[in-house]
Amino acid sequence: MPALTGLPTWRRPGEADWSQVDWPLFAAERQRTIEHAGELGLWTVVGAIHHEPGAERPFNSLYVIGDDGVLAGRYDKRFLSSREAAVLYEAGDHATVVTVDGMRFGCAICVEARVPEVFTEYESRGVDCVLLASYSDAPPSESLDDRRPLAYALLTEMWIAFAVPGAVAGATTSGVAAPDDRWLARGVPDGTPQVVFADLDPDNRTVLPAYDSGRAWRARQAPTIRTRLGKVELLGSSGDPAPGP
Image 1 (cartoon, rainbow, N blue to C red):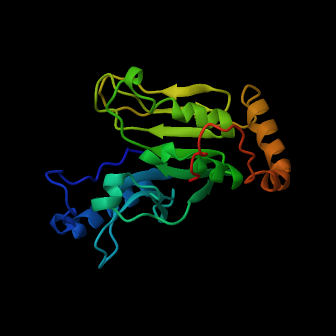
Image 2: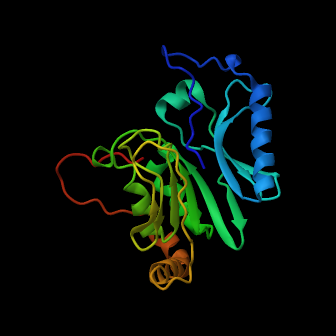
């Protein structure tokens, strides 16, 4: 699952000129990818831009391809960066959940890693693993990009499959974070193309206590949680309270 690129050359502030993109060629390459996934018999998630005919802007998307070589669906990035919202993309309007062999997968893109609600929504929908496609060219010591997947996996008891380009030596690498606060698998930060494999096994006794008990408890508490959130008691007298979101 390659991380998304699709960003046109940035030369000046202003609306991106998507008329320069050869959309028929883009569609043909997408179809080749879909057919190849079917030839391999693999469920595949591929990052790309998606353009609807007549639309001024495309979506920043993840294509979900079935093992039968058919496009099963698409996730469009819902939460955009300031620059993306200003001049680049349209925002998506729904989550995407796909079930494969009894496991439920959700999709998220890049800056959505900074939106916890994306991940808690997927947890509430019974998702087992979120596929997070992103971009990072900074080393782990200078970036929190590889810490967020671990945090979300621990707090939501889901696996987080984190995909980044891996083309920059020393940069953050792709990996799969487990619900028990560890990486099941990680790439090597040497700038070479790699494939990362991990077994997602909810019956694994190491993972089960976090995966099973925490999620089940929160599901039972859901009616109570809804009634006890939203109200706040503000204490102290040093100035006006901070404005809400």
